[in-house]
Image (cartoon, rainbow, N blue to C red; front, side):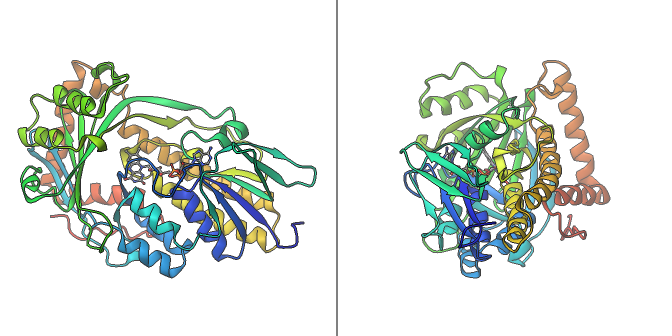
Length: 430
Ligand SMILES: Cc1cc2nc3c(=O)[nH]c(=O)nc-3n(C[C@H](O)[C@H](O)[C@H](O)COP(=O)(O)OP(=O)(O)OC[C@H]3O[C@@H](n4cnc5c(N)ncnc54)[C@H](O)[C@@H]3O)c2cc1C
């Protein structure tokens, strides 16, 4: 069925999912080639923080060779061990400790995108090719598929996997009916170095936690403190992200990064002065704006030897912090299914089994993430929004005060991030 060397898999995109899949297939003895449009490994978008969940850790542990997994763990930042919810004036709403699982193969981890990519590129020199922008594919009479690149070259394989993210060209050609929706939310994010002076400006309990601040009119701020213990990984930093519905922002077309930062300051005059100082102190070069988008539910399609993983098929808002983890889960599952095909299973059957499972959990994650970030939600509306915010704050304060409710909320959140272990233990909810 396949050529002399067995099945050949072509992957488009060296992001979170593509790199994990390439490792998994290589480890299983499958001939794999990965094509990335970036010119060099480090010429990628700003290194924002990604939280790796137990699902993500497990997928990476399964797919990566042990030395690469060890290097990946070494490059992670100190993990967050608490969820810290406050008002925009730093008043406590809910603080829950979820502790740290010492088992690296199923723990929560904080990583920088760039550090993660660097670690995951180890051991793939013979697999990854940079400066290769995929343009389209064609199917051949012998059942193989050919990928074409904008430098005029092409590559042929038995399977083509689109791991090319939100703007996926593989998806656009393969599933032209797939729709991406605007959530109505804009975010502006920035970074500043973690100095002793800057630490003093943080909300209480932010160091060592994931901090979420709920302001009026649906405005929302996330703060991460990144401390790297591994030598030479990255300098420690604080990262913040400000989100609100589009209509609250001015026209930002053509604005410089410094101007984007000023927009956040102009929109938050009554926020805690220390938080505004963190906004002001962000290094302008790190400031970026994103219009948050999400996949619409997708109708079933007939499987073939072309498939998709990660954001290319189920783009989700960062509201639950599970986009990268779902991409990693896809990579683990597809590795398993394609390995079965490598050992004789029908390849389209193997891909169909992958797609049935992936579409189910992938779109559940899309919906859960959208609930957290929806610019049309009532919290963003003028009058009713105030009522909803008051209700949300009261709910969080009450949950914070009642240990059984607190434990339940932490357990529910953990369940979305860990699909393997039924014992979603919360180390201590105090
Ligand atoms: C602000 C923000 C915060 C987030 N925080 C979290 C978090 O805490 N936890 C979490 O789980 N997720 C988080 N996410 C989501 C997460 O980053 C993505 O879901 C994840 O990276 C998707 O992985 P992927 O492999 O599908 O795509 P990507 O990692 O985006 O990789 C796609 C790759 O394909 C390449 N490519 C694109 N087009 C082509 C082409 N034509 N030819 C060749 N190569 C191409 C790109 O250059 C890129 O390298 C966050 C997202 C945002 C925006």
